[in-house]
Image (cartoon, rainbow, N blue to C red; front, side, top):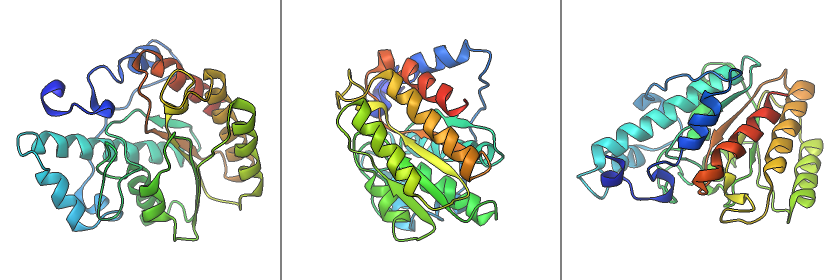
Length: 251
């Protein structure tokens, strides 16, 4: 079914297999089945134009399945946020990704903005007012910026360091300079990996990013933290990189 309806790198068959296998065999991790987001939840982040466009898509043969998958990714992201806001680290192993989805447009394998949908849900429920978003995907999350960037309640940072040390130092500096917030979240793109498109970061760097986020959360926002999957196209190594980040995030 996936081969018929989604030929993008983000939706290719097998993309999540190693992550499901590695996390599923680890007794420290528990899977939660995603529920679809409601239209009301989507419309906190998007206009009706985007909602209707994803429903109809440009290829009517795949529109219904694509819409349902995008709703599940957004709904699963909300569930991840609801766990994270309670002070328990959580990671949304979802697809399609979301950080290139803007209020009224989408591209880059994204349809609904999972980060924005989840954070605006938390705010609508009175659970947060402010958030720090660390987008460590290879590509700038223009959708995150479009929806949340003009709101002073949200801080968004996309590191651009070259190699582990420079990159991690930039993350640390940004967080040190950040204001106090209610929660820290990651647009977690693993395409910066040294054996992926970015050719930049080691597996150990992803674990340290998670650890840096964990330390920030415990010191500055009552332990509230979570991450959502964005990019990452070395399917064979995606699982170990996700695990490394999650291990850091729960440390």
